[in-house]
Amino acid sequence: MRIVLKFSGKNIHPEKDTFLKPVAEIWQRGTRLALVHGGGPQISGFMEKMGKKPLFVNGLRVTDQEDMDLSEMVLSGLLNKALVGMLWRQGIDGCGISGRDAGLFIAQKHSVFQDGRPIDIGRVGDIIQVNPRLVESLWERDILPVVSPISSDREGRSLNVNADWAAARLAIGLQAEKLLLFTDVPGVLANFADPTSLIEVLPVADIPALIQKGIATGGMVPKLQMIQDVLKSGVGEVFIAGGSSLELLGQLFEGQSIPGTRVVR
Image (cartoon, rainbow, N blue to C red; front, side, top):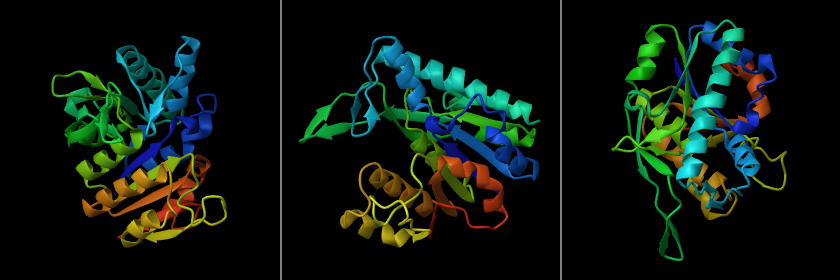
């Protein structure tokens, strides 16, 4: 089974050695996993130490060249290698890579429009091509890939790519059976103000109505639109859960229900 698992920077706890223990246990069962990680809070933290204020447009970080350099250092360096070290302590051979390695992700600058006018948000990209041979090569050698979403444009220059988008494109490129998104939200809610209104199973055909009726709002809208593309492109199902649910990953693979939303065809 091929699975892409993404977690956000808010879910990364370098001081907690057991954070990736459930991932190690799944890997040891023979499942082919690829981890994709974010790091937004950590990037913002370093920017603030430098006296810079993080800016966002439509939920995307405005990234000038200095911010791009910092983002790459934090994502592809500090966090990526910290995760590899955590896997090592669980007895797992991991290899930290980014979308720039072996042309894994080729991207182009993301276009943003406000009031019909284009806005330049800098080195922010959309993935237009996935070359998964590096991930597959690591799998053949029983090495778990840990992927930073930093990507290259066609000239080989860095672009900052949203980790959800990177995980989605990788899942499509690998034709994975599952895409697991562990984020800062518990799943898709029928009522955004009520955390107990979790939609446990969501047919992909119901997504347009959730958006049109305003049930899905804010950052959940592009996430659901992305999930539509993932399922239409051959991935079996998508699971969205809060970051703490990563501790229950083993139960999910045993067929037990854990808090979250399964989006199915």
